[in-house]
Amino acid sequence: MTAFGPPSTPDENRPAPTAEPTAAPGARPGDGPPPGPGAAAGPAAIPGPGTGYPPAGGGWYYAPPPPPKPGVVPLRPLGFGDVLTGAFDTVKRYRTVLSGYLTRIVGLGVLTLALLTAVGTVMARRGAFDGFAAGFWFSATVDGGAFSATAADSPAFGTSFLALAALVLPAALVMVLLATALQAAAIVVTSYAVLGLPLTVEELRGRVRERFGALFLTRLLTALLVGGATAVCWLLLGLVGLGLLGAGAPRSFFIVAPPLSLLAVVAVGCYLVIRWGFGPTACVLEGKPPVAALRRSSELVRGSWWRAFGYSALVSIILSTLDQMIQMVLIIPALVVAFAIWSSGDPSATRMFLAVTVVGVAMLLPPVATLPISHMATTLLYTDHRFRGEGLHEQLAADARG
Image (cartoon, rainbow, N blue to C red):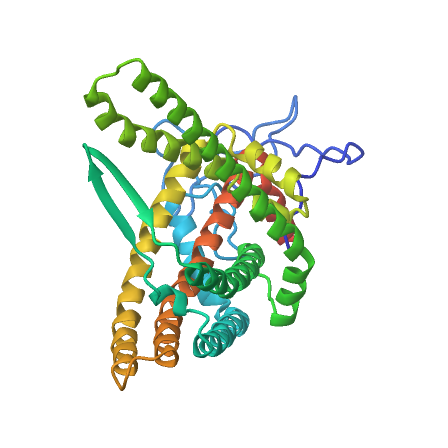
């Protein structure tokens, strides 16, 4: 079994297991079945050397065997420690596969950044960005207590802005595509890690390629739904604020209302992100289309939203701290190099773009290191919800036993 599929239904034609004869109360392992009616009772069993005597109250106590652990987590409902250590153990066990795959991701990202830097340098030499220095400014005037601001009419600024957008938007699209491939790889690797199965770079690439389009659409749909919901919240809150303003609400209300409105919008966005957070995992591992994947995520989270929120928040805090630490280690030397490039001669567009490239690469590496761990933790949390709600761990344990 190479991945978790949709929940299976029990086989009605499977014969029921034959009941084993039960031992008499207080019997030890190895004793035979109880004597039948009319049979003569044999001599009492004598404890052998080193076996000791039964504890007070009669009977013997044997601890249940630990759950099987074929991979990075035991096949039982998981705690937060299992999720966090399982994500890091996945990186450690599959470091060769991950390093081979992530090297290509980072290589594509750096190549894209270098290509756009070269294009931007050529555009700068041809004056495409001269409009930014053409005097775009805001003039503010106060007339009778009224504040007004007007922008300088500079057609060159609009041209430069469009040129910059033509340079930045393709870069953003490429980064989104690379992030999608990164998430798909993390989900697939974690599904193998739970069962301790071997995985090669070629197999990983095949699995990622198979679900890449559906995963991209799932991420896009989630972003549109969450963004649309928060935009509607802002609109409703703005209309309420305008109504209260027209009704003569006190000024103190408009001091308190903005932070409360922000808190309400963040709460709505957070609820939806957690509710649909398992959508990408269900899309990749269960082969579901985008809409069905989000419905599947809602089904898994129903009744356990707070657990998913708590685990996700703790993982985010830990990984954000780690990301900041890595970024501080890389960004300081990058800024030194960028400053050296910028100050090595007269300021020019070429030096500016080279400095930006150095800083951009330094900022690209930390997310590449921490994002896979975040996606792995989410996949393990998805696994835990299936363990608790569907008994998936029992099915996986039976498969592991062969």
